[in-house]
Length: 616
Image (cartoon, rainbow, N blue to C red; front, top):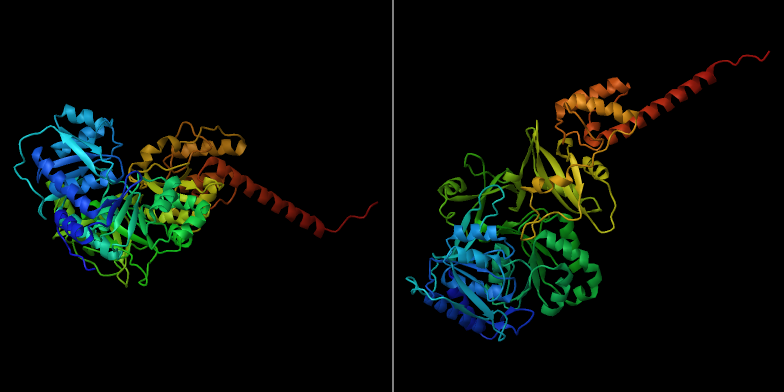
């Protein structure tokens, strides 16, 4: 069935209600499924009720609800009549205070009798409260109550140019920027995802993404509704319950971020029969780069193609995607343009040809018109109508897009630019490594140095030194991290994405090894040389040379002093392979033993060659 390309939610939902009436739209764990006809009826009722409470087109309403069918239906209902601003329910009171203030929210919508810090913040700021009570009639249905205000001056459903969704950027490097997305923006992106994945009314998505994030809202929810399909709305990601939900929902696909896929893979061996009986059509991944090794394992375990896509909030999610078979999927690539126009631009605003690296820029119907009330950010974000994504990449000869790194995440190690994603992938080639995130740490002379945090597969056993030795065979020396941290888990953002920016501060307590005094003559001699070279009062045998302020110049000085002190030929590269006193001491001890053995062999050969004296 050919579906229209609607430019506002009211048209999209009205058309689906007319075409698919009694078909299932929303599924949950507790209540009966919600049909398209009843969903649209709820939407109309909510928009009318909001108008009576004084909320209409142009007003911003903050939504704080747990993941699930209620959040899904509340979002589409609110966004049909005004600007909906979903917020992470796990925010603290301080965070709610910032976001509710920045949004200038006219009201807060949340569950009746649900304790959330947002309530107290809203009361303190004089923001109206709208409370929802779930209805047992069907999944996602609810009744609502709030204190009536004067009637809205702009009632009715929103037009294509009206703002439908307001989200904030992550704010990892600056104050979070408010991103308003119009009805036309989000509908265009929903249709882009639907077309890319060839979604139909026969498809059902198992949604595990949070519905305060663009990925879950557009790719899982709105794209499914645009296709006339259905969505099973889970309470939120839980790898332990994922296969239970699969058994219950019988989905044809699911979408998630790479860390979620990895957690699912860890549980998969215990559910082989269930995987074989619940035939997915494909799996989708977005919001972070998918390691090729994880992609290959997912396709092997589930025996379906994994479709990696590329999106961002400012583009209402999808920008590029690998295609479905029989077109090729290229591991390491985010695929072909799948919605907006995409180009590669140099620092001077010139568009570059295939193969050339530069900043990825986009323009199209799904791209926002600009950040709210932020002229400086808008001036920096747009060039000749193109939106600058902040990502570096290139197109190959087939038109497939490759992302080489986030420009703000590039590590500048003494003038050498290092893409952390390349370092991640080198670590992920090791069979013991499940996750790897490379990040910048401050350095006194280099400006920035390289560190990597890794999580091992269950039961795996490998040391940081062994991992450094492994990646030394795969990367140029200057790209190898000075410090490797093996952790039980790496801190993630609220959507499950591993975040590089700010990770050095979060992991600072782990980056200082326990202090250990020198334990033998070689370590004591090395400690004196290190202290003199680096001008330090004290040093531990487990301190990293580069983390202590060392650089290539001081490395040359230190190696020269070691050669002179121990009378050995120590290669300069050893400081990169063995960057601690303990490791250097072990290396020097082995070299001295080798020299002693060589001298012993020479002496034995000399004595064997000398004529023996007759015994008197």
